[in-house]
Length: 69
Image 1 (tube, rainbow, N blue to C red):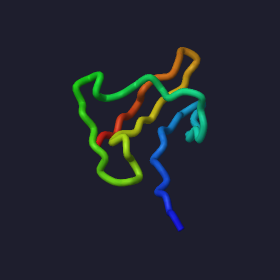
Image 2 (image 1 turned 120 degrees about the horizontal axis):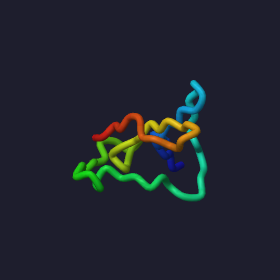
Image 3 (image 1 turned 60 degrees about the horizontal axis):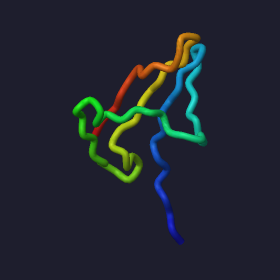
């Protein structure tokens, strides 16, 4: 039997509620390396080495918090 670790997902805040999107057609167009930050995987739950919290408003989607290993 093969067991897989669930990945830490990005969170989205919308109208005072928090959501995790489990499927989408394309990833968000953000990566810390674009800003000189080089994340590394610290555990099997976060292979990308980072996760984000976005705030969804009438004006758009904004990065609110960034967690980097």
